[in-house]
Image (cartoon, rainbow, N blue to C red):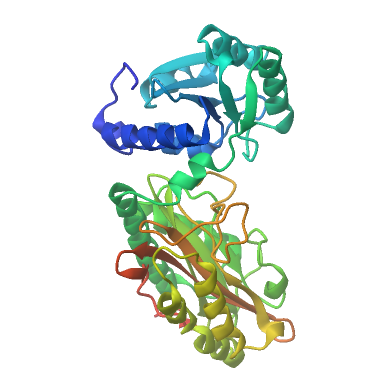
Length: 397
């Protein structure tokens, strides 16, 4: 790995953890007949090297080339990141480029290293860089005789099933989220805005040890909350009698644990309380139906049936979940879903981490009421990380 050793405090994991990940990836590449994988997905780049940033230049193919037979990893990064690339990233070598020559530099390095004779794979399902940049890189590699195949979901598939060290991060994040949500329950009161609630929760999370999440805390309240499920927190002032749905993630070494609860300010809305109580047992049904080694879709369907047998369809916004793990802005949503209807199918193996959401709305009474948990597949079954009650929580207690 990188010839300039990093201090232990600067590395999310010990070097052996990254070496094990690289070894598993190279074994998978051999199975797929791929000689070089060029990784650009920020989450995958972080998984393999520890590289993380709040912004990735959309015009640059910042990434890592994994050379299978040598089990070497070469980082390609912006020249302005030279200091970071040489001191904060686990890799064997660093190659720098600028805006004017980035695709050409990558293609030239492929040729210089003899990688043009084999099969190379590029990630296209990646937030960065922009599609034209990857297209330009692909064109240049083809001109050099490289046989290109899809590199999508290869590293993502490895990331689905987490090591003991990764699961410890998820558990730590889950504990932080629980403590933060309990404190928010005590602090929440009428007279503050949704924006202030989101900022306050972000402060609580940080004060308890969380890193910045891929998405800021979501807060939905008031008569339009049923339509505002993915809106930014607003300047609306919370009022007595409001039902307030809050959704956040705590983060440890970029591993996210998702938690959402709904609070009553003053007199609780009877319908919101009833719906949450009726649906609260669905997570137990999810646990009961989850089977190690099987796809998650059967368990997800059982939980969905549990909810729909008790709650009217017009009040159900979503029952489901998606994989969690390393996440970068703007989203913590993983590529695999409990319904197994995502771009890649998956199984419930030890180390699989997902959230589970039950989100409800009522247009006439004007509320959103939600409960969101992080679940983890273990040898003993599906474990729920949070110990918080799943009904409507009274604020100020």
